[in-house]
Each structure stands twice: as C-alpha cells, then as structure tokens.
Image 1: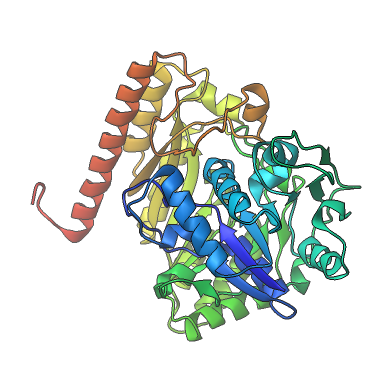
Image 2: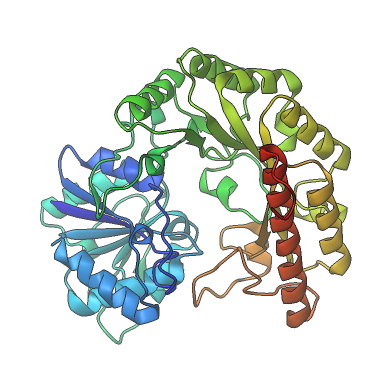
Length: 447
C-alpha cells in the first residue's frame, strides 16, 4: 500500500518563503514500522519554500500530495498546526473524496473527536501509533473500510457521513497500549520527498518517551500516562553510530523532555557517547532540578555543547501555578555550573499566562537576563488542549498558533499593552543573545 505521511505545516503557507529542515521523529518512527510491508513516503511541507499564503498554499500542497498517488494519507499534527492541517484535509477531500485521511500526533491524541468534527479527515489515531497504524492497514487490506474499522485508539467518522452533514464520531473500544520501545526499529530517515535535506536535518533522536512532570501548560504527561519509558541504551548508541556513519550528522540533538531525568542512566549514556571517538557534539533539554556538577562533568566529556533548561518564569506565583516552583538561587547556580564546564547554558521562558500582570512579566525579565544564561528563548503562553491550563481556559484553534509572537493575549493586560511588552522583552532577549555571541567570539560591541 502506498502511504504518505505528512507533517502538518507551520511555516509553509505564511508567505515568507522561510523553511525548516528538520525530520519529525514521530513520523520517521512510523515510517520504519511500516516500511517492510508498505511503500512509505514522508512529505515535510516546512522544508519546501513557497511565497503562497493561506488557501492558495494549501491548494498547491494538496496538488503536490495527490501527485504522489497515495492510497492513504496520514497527517501528524500538534495543536499549533491544527489550523493548517484542517485546511489541508479540506483541500484534499475536495479533490479526492475517497482518499482515506488519517490524523495522528499530539492534537489527535488530546482532542480526537474535536479534530474530526472540525476537519475533513475520516479518522484519528490517538496515542502512539507504532503498533496501531500497521494493525489498521491490515484491516484495510482485508477490505474493511476506514469508517468501519475498529481498533484501540481509533476514532472515526460513522458510515454515511457526507459533505454538508455533521459527522457522528465513533470512539474506540479502548485506548491504545503503549508499544514496547525495545521492539521498535530505528527511525527511518530515508524516503523524504523533495529536495535533499542537509545532514543536520537528521541529527535528532530520543532516548525515551513520555514525561512524569505535570506542568500545567503542557500535555506531555497526559500523553504518556504520566510515566517515562526508556529505550535500551545499546539501541540508542547504535542509532548514534548510524547517524555518524550513514547520515554524517555534524551534531546530535536529544529531544527527550528531560534528558537527565535518570541520573544513573544519564551517566551510562555519557560514558557510551564518550567512548566514541571523536565524540559528536550534542544538545539536550532538561530541568534545573535534574542536574549536578558531577553529571555536568560527564556530559562535558561526552561532547555536550549546550543544555537547554525549562525555567519558564521569573515570577514566584506563576511558578507555583504552572507546577514549576521557582528557586532563583538554583537557577543562577546551575547556569554557572554549566558554563564553567564549557557547556552553553540556555533557557526557555514563557510569559502571558492568564493571571499575569506587568509585575510578573518584569520578574521573568529579571531572572532571564540576570542568571548567566548564554541564550534565552521567549514564548507567549497558550492554554493548549490536553493541558491543565487548557482545561481551565479553552483555546480557539481557528488558525495556526505562533508561540514566538504575542499573537493572542490571555493576560489581565490590555491587548496593545501586552503586545508592546512582549515585543520589548523579545528585543531584550535578542540583544542579550547577540551580546553573548559577541563575547564568545570576542567581537566588539556594535561591530
């Protein structure tokens, strides 16, 4: 069966022509599972430059999809990309009404019924689909229509739904079980449709799935049932070797929610990476409360060049409300430890939570710029579906979301004031980051 897996577009369709060369690991993992029995292609719209916007961009993308002559299209999406994914399903359904359209990914997991009601897709696979998607394809191969398939995790439109009708959504008999990670093949990095991608596009990997921290703004804990499942380290290191030899990646990026969650496991991973000569430089994400000097020593010897910390806020009351209590002394201490070992400390910050005032925003500015980070990244808060914050403040997903801009204001501040304060703080972050680059390269200020 000819399967086309598509990452829902984010940049594609904004008219800027900007691209992002990055392989989505979730789709690559699915492609690896399907490839032995099916012809699988990956289409990544954000790697394709276009100056088209809105419906014109989605119409052109739909034509490109159909040119591949797929027998089933699977679209991986997040809540941020659902708006454009919905538009793409409409464009595809208008051109090929009988083509099975399947949604998957984060948004299809946390809001499957809503996603089907609002889109032209026929079904949604909630949860990790490494095992359920092959099972669905086996049912289709035996002549069972998608709208009559029955499978754990499969939400679908009932038979008889048609244009102009409100579809009846049939829930699955039960949730899909989590696949055993030690039985999954390595992600498939071949089969990307379009111009060749640079080696850096293939540098991402994970050592685990899931998150055990229930931060109120994030749905990760709910997606994984509040637990973390680890891949066997020999399998992870085999993937590192493949990335080095077959794909010639210049560096690695570990996409684990918290790379250093398990201290013994992180030490073992660092030892395995250090044993490879020369060690590939790598970046990872972690938390302030999951790092210590000895661990940093081992990570530095293994090739770690940057650690990105989810600090999120400088406001003590916001820290309490989002489930990440703030310890300013610990933040400064960890940034210093990291920098002293030649690892660049970076941090993520979010402003714009519904209860925040100008004072909360100012507190975040102080911690972000005064704690010794080499790079700081700013995002605007959105109450995403599947998160506790999203339960409290439901979000309209009529269009694409851009967390890098003050696109929507949920604070107590007037819209114009929030936009002005976000823009000013983003400029301060950019100036700070540039100054750190100049410091490392010994450039003169303003040069």
